[in-house]
Amino acid sequence: MDKPVFTVGERVEKLCVVCNEVRGHVVVSITKRGQISRVSCPKCGQRSAYKSGVAADAAASRSAAKAGAPYDRTRTYRAGQSMMHPTFGLGEVTKVIEPGKIDVLFADRMRRLIHSLPAAE
Ligand SMILES: [Zn+2]
Image (cartoon, rainbow, N blue to C red; front, side, top):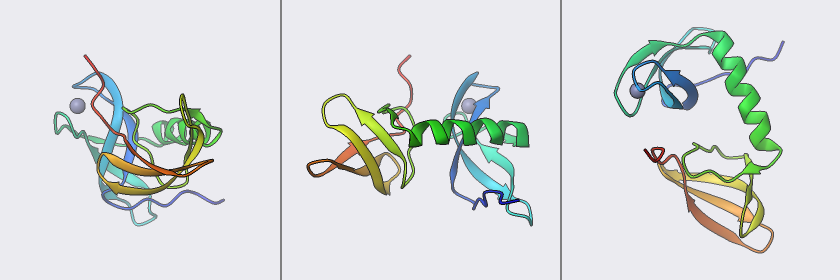
């Protein structure tokens, strides 16, 4: 079976028990088989174990994004994901420029968007 292989420094969505919110966590350690074992919350710094059941949820949300989920600036995008922007229409993330900025190719041209913003209180 083809399981996704992760690397340290990647972002995965997980419920932070301290913030009590689902947010993109930074992968801090992986198993020999390339599966995530521990992640760190970028907001509060809480480190927690990453359970495979949660990984399935993250994979589900990734495939939802592939179908062109609405652009959400609080979401953390990866290259290859699609989004539906309210103004520019369907776009595909071509590159993560830096934490917080992505290049997205829309039907007419490339645009730089922000992402991974903390959710508004
Ligand atoms: Zn947190």
